[in-house]
Amino acid sequence: MAQNEPRLIESGKALQRAGFVHRVLQPPGDGPHPTVLMLHGRSGNEEVMWVFARAVPDDWLLVAPRAIKEDPRGGYSWRIREEEEWPTLAEFDEPVAEVVDFIHRLPELYNADLENLYLMGFSQGAAMAYAVAMQHPELVQGVAGLVGFLPIECDDVATVAPLAGMPVFMAVGKQDERIPYDRSISCAHTLHLAGAELEYHEYDMRHRLNSQAMRDLRQWWQAQADVVDRGDSRKTGNNSTKR
Image (tube, rainbow, N blue to C red; front, side, top):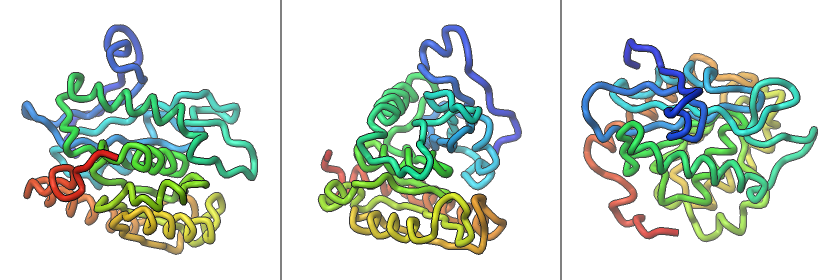
């Protein structure tokens, strides 16, 4: 990760152009830059995902938007979750639409390379990342889902393999107090059904990433950087058909 600090965009014309409060860390050079959109979890904000940024290659553009709803528990969420409720894919339609609009603004704002646009989400942010990828696979090159979940009622969408050829890193905590282990296994099955090139990891951890998970995440990101350096985009290969 570059030594400079991510900039906060929260007011004025910069916010109007972006449409989202966010933090951004721009690499040196003119670009276009491979890009990671980092999506925080429930009751988080644009600050909390930067602990994972050190796993991403130094010369990539990193953007962390603030979720769209103020959460009664504090912070911000992509949707307000009822207790013991697992949201459906359709219930993410509103935040997905807003995030997709934000993605389309990134080339003008920061010279993002949308041929190499990746998502990394934590907890509910992972659910958001999966929802964006399932509904707009033509936009997404890969997903890192960290102790998160896939929205329910995805199987009908998954059977048409929207994620065919898409690399997905999935980190699961076997002691996770928020995402039950059997729910994680079910999500992994759906990702396989959707055609993802799934790299599944489970760890003896709770609702966080331990040091081994961070090492594995770093290795996965380096593998994605190698793909980008070779120019082997899934969007320009056999999986380039829009869905």
